[in-house]
Image (tube, rainbow, N blue to C red; front, side, top):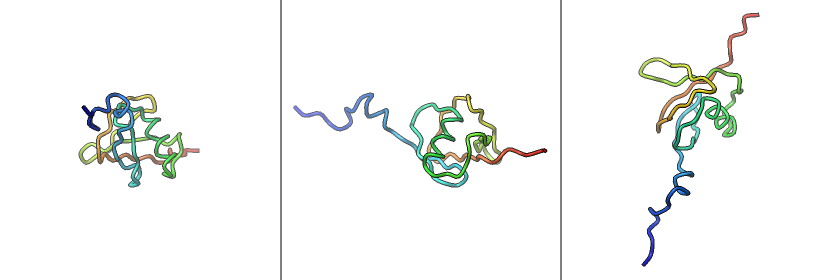
Length: 90
């Protein structure tokens, strides 16, 4: 008897990714709960020109909602994130 490729179990699940955008650029994230910091780290690792100190927001309807660095979120396929330089009020 042979096993099918759908019997990957937890090992296969660990490698699933979803595609989101950060600043209109595609970013692949793991298909699991991640923090705002992890979203930014993955985006930077995939060539998005942001920095870790940039505030991150996620689009909900017609507005963007802030996502903290330590805030756990479950991103969805096609979700849109925005990371911009913090205001410099000096």
